[in-house]
Amino acid sequence: MNIRPRINRWTTSRRDLIFSPDIKSSLVQPHFVVSGEGVSEAIQSMPGIFRQSVDVLCQTIAEDMALGIKSHMLFAVVDSHDKDPTASKASNSDMPLQVAVAKLKQQFGAEIVIMTDVCLCTATDHGHCGIVHDHQIDNDLTIPELCKIALSHAEAGADYVSASDMMDGRVKAIRDTLEQAGHVSTGILSYSVKYASSFYGPFRDAASSSPSFGDRGSHQMDIRSGYDEAILEAVTDEAEGADIIMVKPAMTYLDVVRQVSDSVTRPVAVYNVSGEYSMVMSSTSDDNSRANLVREIFHSFKRAGADIIVSYHARAAVKGHWLD
Image 1 (cartoon, rainbow, N blue to C red):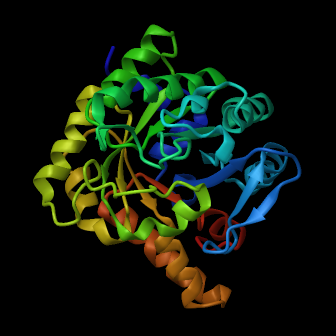
Image 2 (image 1 turned 30 degrees about the horizontal axis):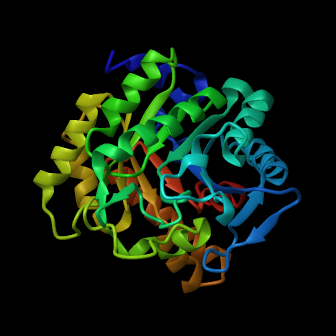
Image 3 (image 1 turned 45 degrees about the vertical axis):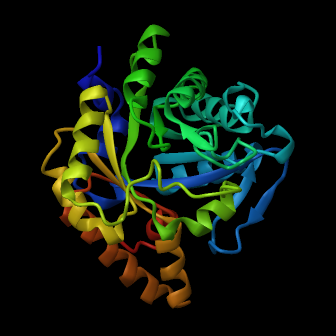
């Protein structure tokens, strides 16, 4: 089956994330997982966000869960010696991300919603989102590698594999791979409308994923493109089996969020990206001022049609009762 509506209803935590009108329930906290033990390394360009080893990450997420943050998105930060041209190590079951997913699922079961980033950029030695062939990103050579990564995440226990690469046809290929392997309850969150934005800089520092040459304009959407292309990408991914449709970035594309939300029947997520986060954090050090900014931003996302909000502000907003 391409479309399994039950996926989004599979657990109470998934239903709360997607269908609750409450902003707090709609939040997803991103995390960066690295190798080693006892590692908690501050990311200078993203105050309050850390790269953490599995043991520390699991403790951090346990504390988040106690606060009521039930949904989490994990990004792998791959050691340089594990990188190669095809991101071959990214699908290994003993990589930190897969180990973290398995441990968290063992600890929290259906209480937690775990989303995992599926892309090649963090595990390729060139930093691109796909296989490079003749100095170009080869769409069709990339898709099998994405499917391997997605399957490894599903096997570890991920609730949603999050395809962030923007290759054509990858949603259907991942859906087919999951179906054939019997992972009929694993969802696909597709970064359907992802722009080649200037707001990703701090994330690329955090994930060590900057391209070593060129840019990502051949696959990420042009910032000048109109609504028709955004809607085309969204409805295509929906037809291929995406369970959640993502628009990224969020703040500068609220008009696109509204157009996409009005055009699809699947839930819509927004990613409040690293550059947007860092702008707020650098604009003031006063918690009350930050609370007011974040509250206003989150309401704008909901008003534009977002069902799910992925944001680095999630923890501070919940912990500080900014949304009460």
